[in-house]
Image (cartoon, rainbow, N blue to C red):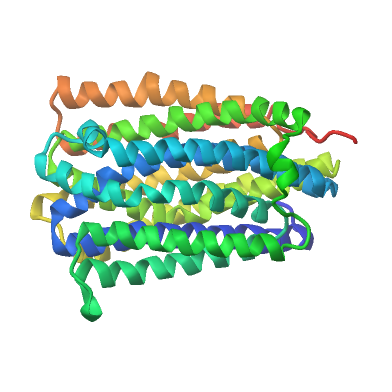
Length: 448
């Protein structure tokens, strides 16, 4: 592992703010779960299943941000700020269009969306209410998240973290006020959780738009919004389409896990919801390492420092193994606390206990894969490997095997959960072999 202080300073200034930002975002789901679970287990399950629509939307948004980050990091490392502004403007046009489609779906067909995930009438009714309110946030995030991505990749990860963290705190406080009806407000339950999310996203967007004026170098410029740079646009889709395919393959596979749990009963849904929240909270440093590590490597590649980028990649891989192991141990340590505060039925609590045990070893594979596939590989434009890898592991292994175990062999809930949590671990050997080929060491910037 590299000992130089420059790398260590970059880790602190880039990875830690992004990790904290990931943690704060995961706290929103945790607060929803704890507060709605305190009201009713059905409300918790309904919000979790309705949240799968947001999850699928976020797959598109994540592909856009990863594609944006590939070029923003390299061009910023090169010092070509004009190209960063061109990429920002073009991706804003694309993300706004995608966001509008999801907004329409949530407004016009929320009941049909809920029926994909469950057949229980109570969950469909509550989930429909949640989607109709939270659907407006899709339009807002299509702008704010792309700009925050640019901010992170242009040396201001801390600013992005502060904006996201502040709006998360507002969201959590509004959750408590609107779900439980504090300070004279009506008790809104699941509608309160959705309304709190919407208000906090409005605040985030207003803050982001103000920052576009104050940002010293990178701004949203109308001339680039009207006329896209043809060369950058082609490069963007060349490397972003495989990322989008990867996100959809992985994310839709992950959504199928929720479909599986949704048809195994409310107890399985509730336990799976809490397990996913704990998993997301403890994976924050792993995800931050992947996202921030990709920025660090991308900056070096764009600057032409290929040897240093390779050294940084090696150090990041070592850190990924350590962070994954520590995250797994943390999950094991917090199991008693999680069981005590989750407010689940006796059967759900039993499911949750063993689901968390399985999540502990899952974290090692998750950390390695997020650091390499979503971070290091994409930093150099090596975005096709993730698509191939996830297509095989999710759709040729985990998803079909999960359905066979659940609906052909009628195995217990925990056996199904064990099968669908193998996907990250089976990737690791292929990921290691691909990493050692060093196809990701590539400067993607163009000379003016």
